[in-house]
Structures are given as structure tokens and as C-alpha cells.
Amino acid sequence: MSTDKFNLANISDTDVVNRVEKQTDEQTVRPLKRTEVWAWYIQSSTFCGYGWISAFMLVPVLIQDMASKYGVEVSDHSIPCDTTVAGFKCVTNILGYYVDPGAFSLYISSLGSILSFFASLSISAVADHGSYRKTLLIAFSAIGCLACLLFFTVQSPKHYWIAAVLSPIGWICYNICSVFAHSFLPVYGRVHPDVLAAVANGESKSVIRKLEEQAINDISAWGFTFANIGTILIYGVCIGLSIVMHESYMGLEIAIAFTGVWWLMWIVIVAPWLDARPGPPMPKGQNWIVYSWKKTFKTVAAVRQLPEIFKFIVAWFILSDGINTIAAIMFVILYRDLAFSHLTSLYVSALLAFSAGVGAYVFMLIRKMWKLSTMATNMICLVLYIVELLYLVVAPYFTTSFGLRNVWEGWFFMAYNGFIISTFFGCSRVMLSELCPPGDESEWFSLYLLADKGSSWVGPFISGAIFSATGDYRRAFWFPLVLTVVGTGVLWMIDMDRGKDQAQKFARERDAASPHEH
Image 1 (cartoon, rainbow, N blue to C red):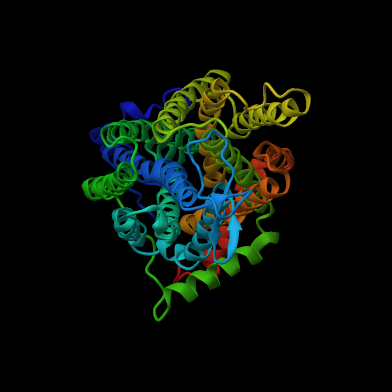
Image 2 (image 1 turned 45 degrees about the vertical axis):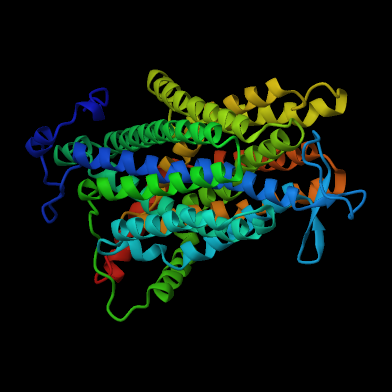
């Protein structure tokens, strides 16, 4: 069967009904519908607006700005901080310790990542049973929206600690929604009409896998494209609010609240079309939290049966921290050293989102034109990251004029990072979709998140420590450079075909051992 005919845009619900639905003699599968995949695109673009705008930029800026205005000069703690001076050096008394506001913002991000780790670990496995995947997606969207609205209680700089408390709550809801949303991907790949038709027609395993890989890649790429389009729309509203509110704290708080309302509103709107594709019922008498921990422990204990996917989890643990830390350091430098205002920060972030949408589409065309595998596409992205980090690390040793010391460099590198980032994260989740055993999607995407958030507190924490030791955030780029190089090496060691075979064998043995759970 030719794979060139695959095109999601041409699939109609009528076409789906007319396709061969029989996957095996014992199991009838409902093929993926166009309304279903479009609902998934839209929901992906809703919570990303909060995660990419509020959690990643607006909330840290609010915390950092308020903590700075409530702080004192480094040289004399009796003098209030003057934040009108470019490159101001101030500290804030936090629980009896004087901490740099930028470092404090990074530490709060670390705390949010740690709490997300445990929250996801305690609930994620439940989503593979019944219709919980969809139900919990809506529930945590509602909690995240409430947390966004509570930012209105931050009335003055001395209340910065309220924003610091609400930030981890938002992170938890955003990351758990990411797990549940991502876990639809491998399911969608397996029930795509072209894949089911290939199975029914007795095509070879290699042809079926190629179709499934292409399906998941295209759905993932289009998902990130829609997420970036939605994010740009939200940025437009936030920029308008910032202008009207004269870059005030209230303007930031209204913008944060808007991202939360937008998040919940669209999840509720598309919910009727987002098929939960229910899994087997939860085993009777099981506590959600205990069950999730037990199931995760069993998964980790299966390392000998699934070595390739565990290589991926290790690589992702390293790489996600390295890549996320790049942007975190950049935002601090832009705001602190290059004196980017709230409005300018929104502009440059909107550029990042626009560039990410363009990059996702361009890389999708390149992948199809050159017939690149998911692994090859991801390697290209990682090489581009390493080139960027080498410049940021080496340039400051030879000159004081370059190395993220100019405003134009800030704009350029935000656009550069945006062009790569959607493809890198998209390819990474596709690799996991291909490697995870059928029936355990939410569990494995939870481990994906756990690997991400389990390490992502390290980068901001070490970056803050490097600044405290050197007084220059640019020195912190050494850390993501080392992580990216090491993580790339681990990722290159993965044998994707062997990993897919291991996942199928593991699923068969698991189902035979515990038929009541699967």
C-alpha cells in the first residue's frame, strides 16, 4: 500500500464509515473520525495558551517584578530596590534569606515541576481505564482556570507570595492535562483508517508501522501548529490588555485570568466531539492513588522487557531539562539585562509562538520531502540546538559585544528557538507513541511527563545557583549545553523497530497475565 495517499485533511466521516473496520476476527475498532481529531487539535491549543504564555512567561514575570519592587539593593539592604535602572541588582527577603528575584522565580518554577511530578504519578494510570482520560482533562482544566482567576487577589508587590503559591497549582493542572491529551496520540495512530485498512488487507508489519508512524507524526505536527495559532491569538489579546492597562500588575493579572477562562471554555465546547475511547474498567476496590503508584512501579520494573523505551525516557529526562532551561535563562536575561518591558516580553513571546507554528509546518514538509524518520528529524533539531548553545557559551569569553548582549540577539534567538521547539517536542512525543505498549498510553505519557518534570526543576535551580555564584546568567548556558549533548547521544542509541517489537510482546504477555485489567 502506498503511503503517499495519507492526508488527514481529506478524511471525511462518510469515508471513514465506508472503510474496512475489522481489525481482527475478535475485535471491531471504530476508525478515527475527522470531527474527533479536530476536537483534539482545538483542545491542545487551549491549555497550551496557559502553559506557554501564563505559566512560562506572565506568571514568572509577575513574581519577579513584584519581588523586585518589594526588595532592597544588594549593596545596602536599607535602600529599596530601584527597578527603573537597567540591570538593577536587588534581593528580596524570603523566609529570612535575601534572594535574587530572578533566581526566586526560577526556584518557584522548580517547585511547580516537583509538585507536578508527584501529582501526575498519583493519578495518571487511572486515565487508561473507563472514560477517565476525558473526564479528568475537563476537571483539571476547571481547577487551572480557578487558579488563574485567583491571581486577582495579588494586589501589591508585598503580595508576590500569593502569585508564588498559585504558580505551582497552575503548573500541576497544565501538566496533568498535557499527559491526558498526549495519551490520545498512540490511540489515534492505531485507529487511523489507513492503518486499519492496511491491517485488514494483510499488509506487512513494516508497511503498517510506516503508516502508523506517518499518521502520528502528522497528527502531532498539526496539533502543534494549531496550538501555536491558538497561542498567537491569546497573545494578541494579552498584548491589547497590556497596552490598555499601561503595563500594570492588573493588566498582567487580567491576561493570566483570560488564559485560564479560554482554556476551560474551549475544552467544554469541544468535549462532545472528543471521543474518550474508553479503556477497560478500573479493577474493583482499587484506590486511585495507590493503584497509580503500584502500576507505575510495575512499569518501571519492566525495564528488562522494554529496554528501548527506557532509553528514550532517560534521554527525554536529560534533553527536556536542557531545552526548557534555554528559554528560562533567556527570559531572565531579556527582562533583567536587556530591560525588556512587560509589553516587549509579550511581543517577543508572540514571535516565538509564530516562529514555532512556521517551524512545525516547514519541518513537516521537509520530513515528507526527504522521507525522514522521526529519529532523523529529531536529530536535526538537536544539532540546531547545540549550534545555538555553542555560540551562547563561547561568545562571552571572546567579546563583551555579543552572546545575548544586544536586543536584536534576544529577538533573533527567540525566533530561532521557536522555529525548532515545536518539531522537537512533537517528534519526541511521536517516538514515545511508537514505543509504548498498547493499552498503557496514559501511564507511559505520565512517565514522559515525570521524566520531563522530574528533571526540569534541576535546570532552573542550577541556573539560579550559577547566577548566585558568578553574577552572570550567561554562564548558566553551559548546563543546558552539556545536557543536550549527552541526551542526544543517548537518544541516538535507540533502535525504534526493536522497541516496537518489545512493546507488542509486552502487551500480549501483560494481557494474558491480567485479562481483567486490559
